[in-house]
Length: 210
Image 1 (cartoon, one colour):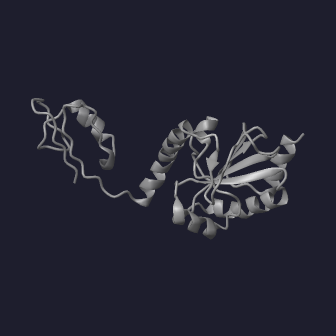
Image 2: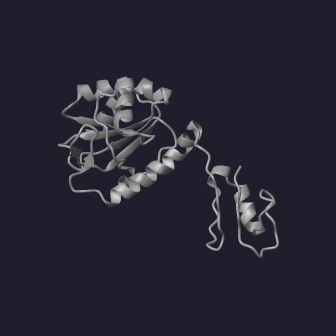
């Protein structure tokens, strides 16, 4: 049960909070928001909102925006050493030793991602001198939890700890899996949406090398 204590002196009570007095415009805005994210931008109001614990569905809905925010902030302070990797070290997208870069977005709960991972593993293993395949966790999981998920999905290629989408000018993915394809200079070539087979990836490589 959320409650709001708002500015005194306004004649219109809030329909959702009958004990408070608030601008009707403010109430109409609140009515369009879920209870967990009621936001009132008026400095003169005092708002007290006990947030409920986010459900798994809420976390999935919020993940793209949070991932985009984290990536944007991280990209602003990106060091010359490049993007940090889960297992240590870092890499630069613009220093690929003449290879194409495939950045795959996945999540533990994504069934098509699980089907796609073996295809990516095989593709990466077949062309170590022509491509590098990287992973980014969609849910921004970190530490041991991320390692456990990588083991569970049998991901055999490096995982980035910072999402490069913002630096590449790419908005958050609207669905999973999704794979960004970069040229040898780290520039975006194309976005592959949905699960990819090894044949799909081989075709992308062949087109890029023409």
